[in-house]
Image (cartoon, rainbow, N blue to C red; front, top):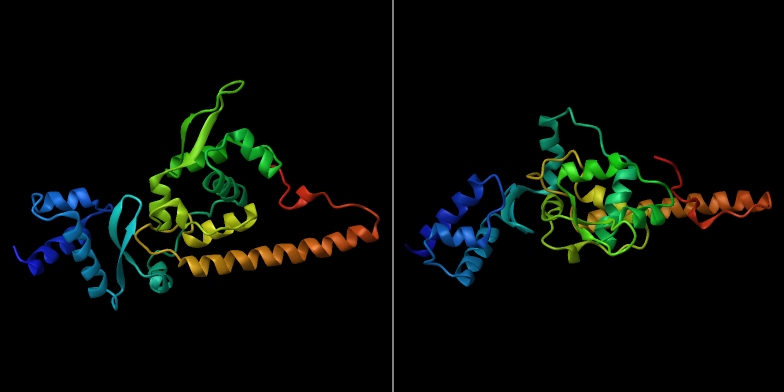
Length: 236
């Protein structure tokens, strides 16, 4: 089998697969006749072949897949106008805490958010396949330690946690996760680029800071001190 034929087989397998394809599975396609380096070269060629098309070939946590380009998503959304409700701010902030500070216990999350976390919030994230218990902390009650899954990375179009943008606040982290891939989106449709998501989250952080500054000034006029944890304080 020559290179052109091998690339055609690989392209077909990737287009027909409903899940990301691992390099190991790719080798099975060719009965181990092609090594990892050769496959990587073919994948890079396919990426160039599709550079000007509506689909792009990307590497995610569990393998390689084709997905629609971010800029075309607004058109594809028109085919599915009815969407399920978005996850709440509480859910996204809890997800952000787990993603950026894992492994964490429920108590850790509550300390960071400053409010009690409803059991249903954790269940929603587990049902989505985004978080899981990976162990238990050796302390009183041996609470479960939560971490994100490979499915979480796949849905965000990332191959590793190292690709998550570095943001300081939980609000900004939750915002960037929601921007990268809204919960109601089909994973086969591309998320925003990291650059666009970071810009969106920074705008959110700036708006939050401006609002807090205005509130702080009003409270100062009333001779009251605004607690540091006031941002985002509410009960779920």
